[in-house]
Image: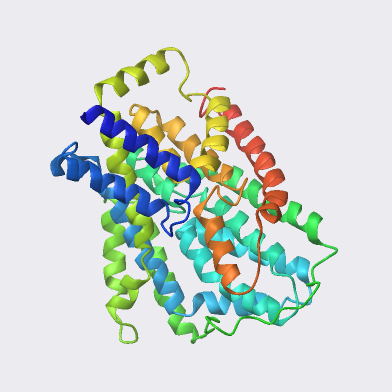
Length: 414
């Protein structure tokens, strides 16, 4: 009974990852993963001790710490100040597009890209609509560059955080490998979007920016920006030490939360608890499944037959299809479950390829969905085909560069 219950919930959970929600109900992937984990505990198929052993506490704590640090950039007015600087280039859309790509890529390499997208999307929409520019190409640049830039760092996105913790990957060593394909992806993103949109920057029918929920662009003095910038510098230095990354991030976050202007609960409210619930639920469901003797034997047989993705071509195919079917975070958690002895080269390659593959479709990455949903609240419709039209060439070209770089560099066999 335990076998059938665990496997059924495992299949239903990942089917839910592909669908995104239950038809007719307002529940999302996080609820599906959390509910499945609760059912396993409630039924007794998984004990609390087993559930705790499946959780990757280091990854969860690191993600929490980085979210708290990212909140300081918003509170200090850094995002609003950057958006204000970008808006001055509204009469030169090509230069504005370049600024969005560079800004989104750089911030996403040192902060969690979900937070960057969440903060900048409403600001961009409001500013661009007020200047009668079509926000869609710039929103595409924001999303595509956020994914591309985040692939350069082990703290740029949730799946890289997880892979870095699981494989104990060196922070700067990973960046040395990932920097080239990430930079190439940023260049490709700019080139494709410029080529597709350079003759139609303006909106066909100007839409006034939504008054409801319009972002308050509070810009403070330069002294206010020192706190988040200093915190980022300290964090990167700590990542170069032997201290666990999750402890470093939490220590910096705790220091940042000492403030005269903002209450500590304001920082806590900025945390994406939905994403943490998704992680926790998937950890428990996947961990329970891969511990079953039948699943362990099946994984061993698949590995011996060469059916598990352990080379560049197979890993790229799995990242491209699986990431855009169930999402790159669920895919990475699943692969870590069936590939417990994965080499560092495979983990590095998976981090780069799964992130870049998330640019294919709007459902391939949480960042893409954040940008689309946040833009919709501002009156801007970024549709599935709008995204795919740019995402398809950007993803295929970016993956081609990444595969060539990883293969020729000898980080993973073909």
